[in-house]
Length: 349
Image (cartoon, rainbow, N blue to C red; front, side, top):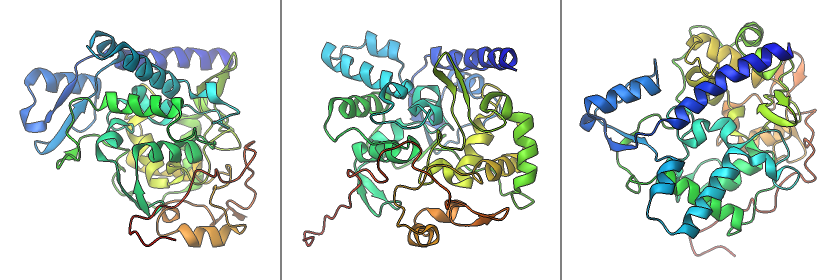
């Protein structure tokens, strides 16, 4: 099994590296794309939807472009550090990260790839209101959320060197994009597949998972670690993202799977399979939601409208109340103190 996993690893990483090596920065409306640019996008994103005329298309600059730029050497150093933290967030394990994920585990292609959560969009659409925490968020606060939920961690402090570096990397990727673009962004986030003909099913999802996902992520969802380096992240259990992470929402997971999995061969599953696999993966136990009130059903009810309506947290599946047996996943605290409400009305006490 290990030899098989290593062989699969080599193949899929070769595909990922091929994407990272491609360099054709683009920042324009779909209607303005040249034939060469359209051909590049089709090669880079086989079988993905082509840009529509009214969509804004952005393929970020690479790290090679950074080195060739005229930015100050110290700014380059900060952006370089942000990139390093983004692709190897595990270097902060035990301090800011308490699972076996990197930022790039969810935001593929160094955070550059369309349909894989490209992070540059956050740099040009924030500050903005976010329903999940019911207030206006900054770019740094959005990164705080990723650490608190997806990394099941304790975020770096606002204004710290690591936080500034990560924010600088996001902003470098957004080079050439106007602030608050009016047009729809091509490939933003993880677009949900078409609504399934059949209700997403845990057992069907298990079969499809074993066929398409287990070779990399393990039959037990624990991921793949070689020589103490995480190659594929855990999808459930104590080493995975917690119940408050975006990937815990079935629609988000289905979109990620449909557009990106199996890695290097996507899209390879049907819409129905994507929904079913998402139901199976997100129907497993994982670390507790940091907003836990002490009662799972109460927590779900409190955040159902703004978040948990998309998750299975606090619902019964196969005779188990999901979230009831959740641990902290090795994290020393439940809720990072940095997660605080904001108020701009001028009336807050």
